[in-house]
Image 1: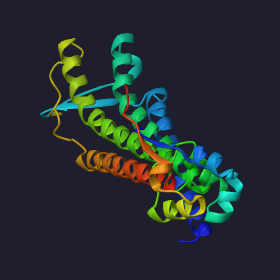
Image 2: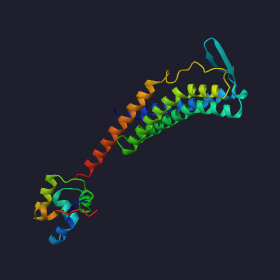
Image 3: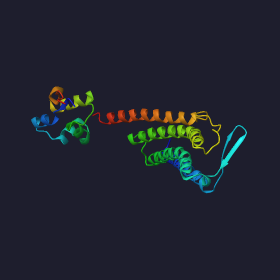
Image 4: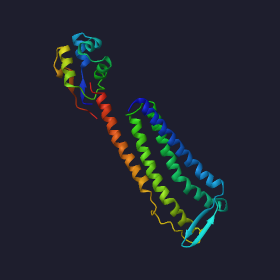
Length: 176
Length: 70
């Protein structure tokens, strides 16, 4: 691949990462500001409310549950964007890139786990606090995003492999 | 590291400057500096051979094993 092509692909990667990160910031904020109803079901029963209708503590818990996986995803996208900038600067096989891959892997895995567990855990808490009349039909880990978790593990392992490669490269460059 | 490079000692014995050795051996001054200061991770046999030929010495005159105390 030529440097010009690599620069173009890196720029595309940067744009996609920036857009995805931006969307992850804006989407939950809009959900909270617009008063979008939050709907949960139990069998045929439907429970619906808005963030504004909840108490301060319950609202804070809901915001945390919504934002926690998004923050992990935003961090992952920041790593991708920084990786793309490094590629554009011509840094291709450097130890700093391996760290980005490892951070990206961990962030994606965390985003997957938080995204899958936040809603059912919050449902249990809301039921225990009497906010919900029943435990909503969101079984714990039933909706685990295995593809995201798998991608996270893959990036983590790739990062570790690249780290070893960078160490070997350093060692080779110091062979006289 | 337990392997000590005594290149500076040999250079002094032969009254040769690092630049001169670099010219004779065909290695950059920067790389010879890395070797002299003990920052090198490894030395190729071909490099060692060239240095020994230029300094008229044995590999043992340049490289020495010293037990680490820590």
